Image 1 (cartoon, rainbow over the protein chains, first blue to last red):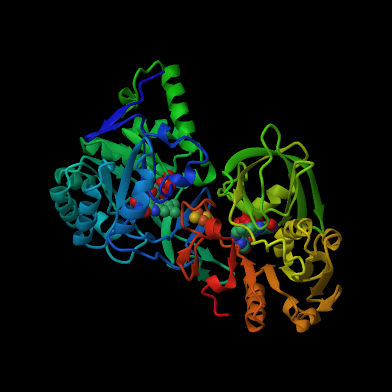
Image 2: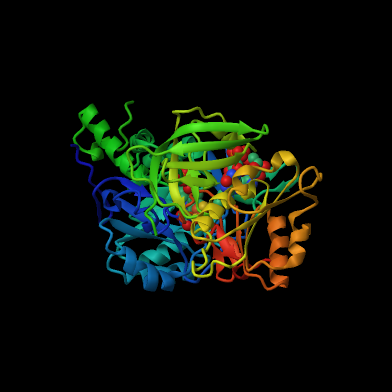
Length: 303
Length: 262
Ligand SMILES: Cc1cc2nc3c(=O)[nH]c(=O)nc-3n(C[C@H](O)[C@H](O)[C@H](O)COP(=O)(O)OP(=O)(O)OC[C@H]3O[C@@H](n4cnc5c(N)ncnc54)[C@H](O)[C@@H]3O)c2cc1C
Ligand SMILES: Cc1cc2nc3c(=O)[nH]c(=O)nc-3n(C[C@H](O)[C@H](O)[C@H](O)COP(=O)(O)O)c2cc1C
Ligand code: FES
């Protein structure tokens, strides 16, 4: 049995397998399929200061080996999260982390302050990369000065572990990563969805109500892997890698590219017990390779 | 609520008919047989297809508890459904089940209630199990089933075992010519409750008929789904409660809950 434990900022995780925001509900949706405590952690749904109804239907379209979504951060707001969701999930024996989203710096800060008051939420993931909201969202993640402004403002009020989630919809992801690191983020996660589009040829219309949406699933894995690899060489803080992971092998590839931990997103929809299988697969791989700790594998590509 | 499960089912029989439909009979080995409610669905995994990456939602068509069999009735419209139509006996199929809320079942003391089940095309699939479930509880359901042509009227013999069946076809080759809402049966206006499943436009006209005549009505929606378990919020419908997940709060809704222009 290899040592799967890792550290990210002040966080201690029993293993590097986490689930991605927006694909894992509040965790409870998956409780029938596996023991949630066996995962390293859960990033719950994108949460905003005020309730959001999200975008109109159709919000989803399947694409080869993936899907486009335009959910648009539908959630009942942070106050509802605190009053109705938090009491139900705080007893889950793993790290529950909140994905904080917003459209203004003030919103991000106000939402973060409310989450900060919750004992059992040891970290937040600042989502500066959502492609599905009209204002803010991805705009913060595609512009260095905006990214730096929002991370600085949140860092000032938040002293637990701050993870910043980056957008792949940029020319050079390492620039933003370095800015975020300089503003004091404890870790970065990448990637959020790639901006994409689908068209119905017969009806000559875009399929999504929002025209464009975020691409996820196995089809984005090569892009995500490349970005993790580049970012690993550019920053010192830990990287949480995600994008198209569907089995333990994919997870190992991300770790070798430089990720300290990984998140599983869209593939939860295909196999709702996948996180536990990935934990087991990583463990077997490490034993087979004679590696004592998963930490030794991070960035461990053989030159 | 029954716990949701994920398991491999075994194909017992797969009958293709009228070119683009198939009836898939599945059985579950080594696991307790689940309790399914009429109107619930399963999420079917399509293996090894990059074009059918997501699971496909399919309604429970019929449940034979004695034989431990689950029936799915499928219209072949694309990659995933074609894959299902090609499955052979002994092949395995991975399902997540049981999903969704199901139709509401009237109080068994009101056996004289006239229950009308209206199906359109492949939308008649869940109505067979609903009919059987109602029949078992002492009700006598009436079926009104519409389709494009006589080749798209499915499982009529089975429906006939459960109650009176009326049909419509657009070409007039079986039953009355036209759409279900034009059927002469509806002029009597003596249903106490209507259940319907089919294309949205058809369900909208059934909902109008029900509203005009003060008949309570439930519709079963087929919004596009990704997870099927309430995690992704892709399948939402506008309802009086806001954007609501069809996969967990539905697929069955009372028409009074929907924001349809009825
Ligand atoms: C709750 C629920 C229950 C369902 N029950 C049944 C059932 O009992 N029997 C059955 O045959 N079908 C049922 N469907 C529809 C079925 O899920 C789709 O036909 C199937 O997913 C198509 O997959 P495909 O890969 O064959 O087609 P694709 O290649 O994905 O698409 C082919 C065509 O089908 C259309 N389509 C795809 N998904 C849907 C959808 N969800 N609703 C309507 N049209 C769609 C597309 O617009 C496209 O034109 C149900 C859907 C839902 C949401
Ligand atoms: C339906 C859906 C909803 C999502 N919602 C969020 C969200 O609220 N916040 C966020 O940061 N990322 C969100 N994402 C992005 C995922 O967390 C993840 O970054 C992306 O899907 C890539 O990983 P994957 O290929 O493993 O899914 C969402 C993705 C999907 C498919
Ligand atoms: S399909 Fe994911 S929430 Fe309904």
